[in-house]
Image (tube, rainbow, N blue to C red; front, side, top):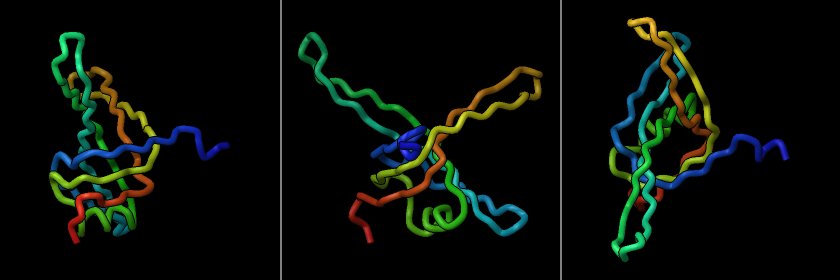
Length: 112
């Protein structure tokens, strides 16, 4: 049952080309955004779409795969967990970030 705690699965489109960072030990980090769309019909019968944006972060081998194969606009499925971080901005205010730490990624666009 512990595997069900803090588990996120999303399907959407990559919003930007991944930013790849190599840290001191040679390990890679991939940062990118994912758009998910919810389609519905409102009370007036009009079709509506709500887009949610998610910040994704992947480490190690998954980051290397993202660097090689994932580009802006492609449809992917991701499996991961929600991570909350905070930091102090230059003006002294506390800033909060919510992101998805990617454990798995699957390309759905059909591109080789």
